[in-house]
Image (cartoon, rainbow, N blue to C red; front, side):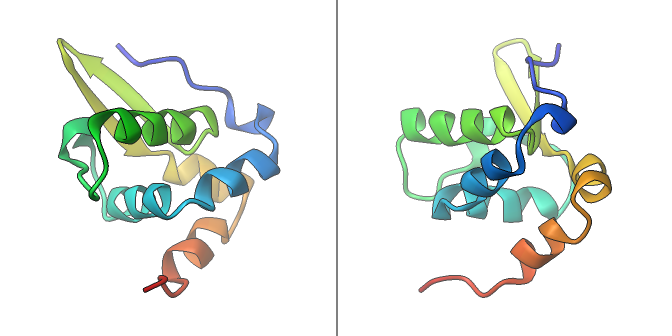
Length: 101
């Protein structure tokens, strides 16, 4: 069962950019861009479970990810193809940008 996600075309670009502006969310997007689907619990990044859940929710509501429920587990993946179609080059620019130290 997939959780509710907005249609990407209905999400303002400002919401997408705001979601990408946070360091933790950017780390999550970079991890997801390596491919595949990840269990939500696999993302640590030095934050609490509640904070991690918040960041994953922000990414989902901004249309950047899809989340699938399977029993008590949640799996997340990047909506790469849809994002590349709607905002060509955006993810590539974000993913290749230097990281802050």
